[in-house]
Image (cartoon, rainbow, N blue to C red; front, top):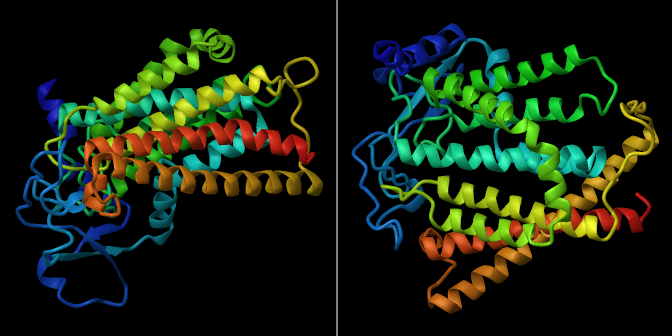
Length: 401
């Protein structure tokens, strides 16, 4: 068993998958020039310095300092550039697109679109499940501290998250949890062939999981554990979804309790031995979840919770040009308000924290301090969540959108 697990962690297994998809790392001796048919990618070599006192100021390069040597001194030292060859551009762009389905750009488009244009009932389930599984996945990385695949032999197509640990793959967790939560929340509520929904959920989960191997960011074991955890979580919690939703909408103490618990989880995030984006990203997720709880409760209190008319399962109406235009108008208005809310909350919270701690919060390194990063991220995205679930739906109602 131990030998089998070790084999699934072997970076050579990831490299073989990349080569089978037409992605190969150029030998070091061939990277001095840039060949016309080659797509450049950077990996960072050398002995990186640890960031002393994560709870205080980072010592050197903050976000670009990585203590295990694979991502170091990105701001102040010369980077060693490796290039890679792409023989199959169809798979290259397909897997890059799939990788984006597990990143922030997907969350800030798909989840609000579902809330404003499809069904708030489904959106609530998606957001609650996403927040919980992402927190467990992110915290597990910094507790287990299992490294990502090394380069070479692996080609690494991403650098922002290279400072994070690898086990488990939160892309695999999120993609599996969101796709199957969407399936479970809509079956019996809307009329569509279950087989098509199941195939779509499996396809999305598989594609995103394979993208983590293609981009060289996870081992096979990281991905398997991420998918397995998400499926196990859904199986254990699915019977409690209706009761949880009722509690979230009706109990007056629930929003305050959620905010307190979420902030404490953010502030007491597992201590890191080097700076990475995991704590900030996790705080952002928990803040958005807290704002969702507050917004949903307040919207229900005002009697604005969306309740479809007619018996279940509901038919899916055809998409007309008028409906498409309404959806676009709702989405554009909502995103615009979210951008303004984020800017206002971030600016004000950083200003107040700077005055409270007497530090210059314009400095990126200062923002990485625990007492700065967690409060400003949490407040900002809690406010964004509240706006998304209260102000935006109210304006949609007032403007007859």
